[in-house]
Image 1 (cartoon, rainbow, N blue to C red):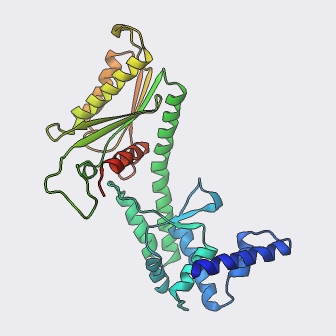
Image 2 (cartoon, helix red, strand yellow):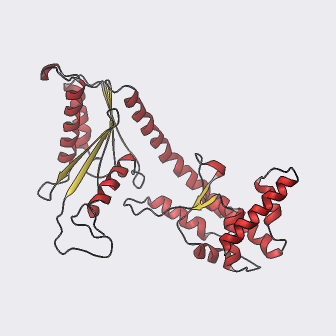
Image 3 (cartoon, rainbow, N blue to C red):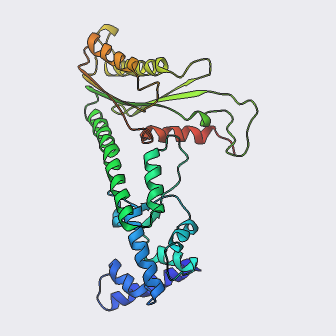
Amino acid sequence: MIRDNRCKKFTDALKVLENNSLESTRSNIIGLLLPNTEGSMEMFFWMEEFFTVAGDHIPNANNNEIHVDNLTYQEYYHIYLETAFHKLKITAFIWMWKNLFSHVKIREFKNVTGKCKTCESLSRLRCKFKNPKLKSYVTELHDCHRQMYMSERLKYYERRQEAINNPTKVLSCISDGMAQSHTSCPWLGNVNSVNKPLEQKILGIIDHGRKKFTQFRVFPSVSGNTNLNIHAFLLNLEDWRTEMGEGLPPEELPWPEKIYWQVDGGPENANKCILGFCEYLVAVTPIKQIVLSRLPVGHTHEDIDAKFGTIWTNIRVG
């Protein structure tokens, strides 16, 4: 019923604006659709303030899109009730959100590991605080945190593009392990389970310059530690040299001038052995530079996770 009424009122409002040669801007539509009651006015300005300080303003989205935490309409409605003087019904709350704040989207829930504790805490505080000054302060803290991890993410995509533009000189890769809870065979979903599933590990590497994804599948007899990660990296490097020097004898195969290696913050990656291995390669090969980078814990999910998602979709049952 709300959806049908919304469509009709929007259509009528657009016709009024068109007939009077007025632009269909958000302020004009609000002027036509917002009910002229104290309760509606109060709810509108509550939403305006709440979404501004408790939402994430998406810089690469159209129409100034704002994302809010993954809560239900009912949960947001109860937050509104805590401070509202004129307490309107939830149907009015949902109607106003969908009509006058359609640019505010509830963030999709992603069932991934490694959620950032800082983001989680700041998001919870933004919803909990009632004082506008406290909300604004927490929003500023969140913006500072976002600036920190977004700067490194931008660098990652810049390095990836450099390898795509110079595939014979630059090797850019990302290595990561697939969530072990998703690799058991068969995987029957969150409800059903198997008493003795086949346990396995999957380590993946994306070579950006060659647009190639390689997966290394091992069983519990092989430890998923630093040795496995280095072994997979060397196999990808060997494959790169073979492809770039196709037809040449082994001793004449080329080496990349520069390597970008993106890893997550797991103990198998962020350790002295990995650093020593990179230094060793630079010392004994023609490789001039290896840039080893990692994102903060909770922000390590990148393009490789889409590959893991495809694998997971194909091995699960039901």
